[in-house]
Length: 368
Image (tube, rainbow, N blue to C red):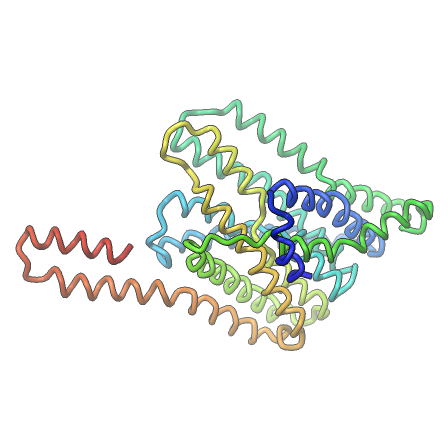
């Protein structure tokens, strides 16, 4: 299905076409799938741990992005802030839910949807506040705009179709109702919409793959470090709670591997539109490249885990995969730094002041 999407890229040539397909997925197919999944699950107080765990994952990823200045020192400040917005965010709707539905069933989709509530709070509110903090730090004060924007985001959080159907489904479960309580004409439409989710999302992934070759290598390294860290976290989590069912363990592995969310990009675009000077808080074109690579990257990681479930359920395998991914992604940067130091020592020692200045400029060019 992803291959068919790649073949259709020539037919779907404008961003409006992709946007229309994305609206169908996020406004109809995905909400229908989550609605059906939630109505087939018995909710309990223990399920509150899922949104809390998602928030914890977001927070750990946000803290880990500070390490980029050590692992990837060549990344300039605007790009570093861009990565701090994108890498901690998760978009399970497009990258995770369809595969959970196909491999693990509706119950896993329902639990993932509950976990996504915590992630949504993080990407919609906390990341917006972080973006505005940086904006006020580098630009003139716009407090009134910020307050009104937060109100808009709260409204968007409640009115988003996925969140609306979750609220309706939870209310129905509270009154002891399920899908069979609805008229057959309504339940039939919901079930049919749910069935088209997986093929639509797989086609969308193939259609949306557009990669900027200039930044491709760097983005793959960054996403590999992110994925490796998440595999390490999942491995430690399974080691701490080995009594979990296999489906919950797989959910704990797969959900964090979701691609980067579009919402931080929306916040950054909003900030970019308010800035008048040439110096920008965020690198918008780089953000688009990260989003373009993130979706297929996460798809490969999630399909790999779900296709080899017995291997992935061993926490030591997860720790090995995570450590290997981080090491391999960091290796080019470590080699470049060693070359920089060696080149500097060879060229600069025992030179005249004028020669040293020329040599230093050459070292900077080589490092860049």
